[in-house]
Image (cartoon, rainbow, N blue to C red):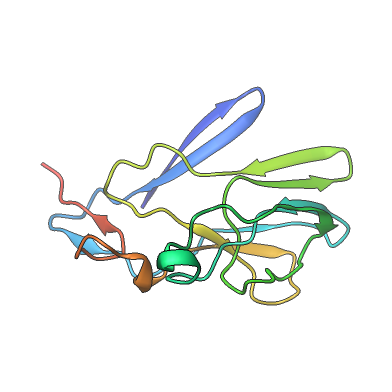
Length: 143
């Protein structure tokens, strides 16, 4: 596996690349996680439970951000957190988001199912699919 980084004076981005893939493979789980110290603070928007709300339109990304909460706070809606997610640890601010999705990977969310200061990447809820397609990302063949 290759990890491709883009580093600048004020940020770091990364993505994974699997050069040996010769066919379309479904990715079943994401193992990326972000660990903060227990004194960190967070500004997070809860992810709505899929297929709830008016006309079953959730997640619609319209929940109110919880501001300056202790890191490790569990989402009140139990479906994780949306992006961008802002954290402050000591005098350092960290913003986690996703970008440049090209159709070969699904949109994700941040998960922390316990009072842990570790946030992991979670895939979409299968109920969020509305196109008849799948909800898991696929690594496409090369060449």
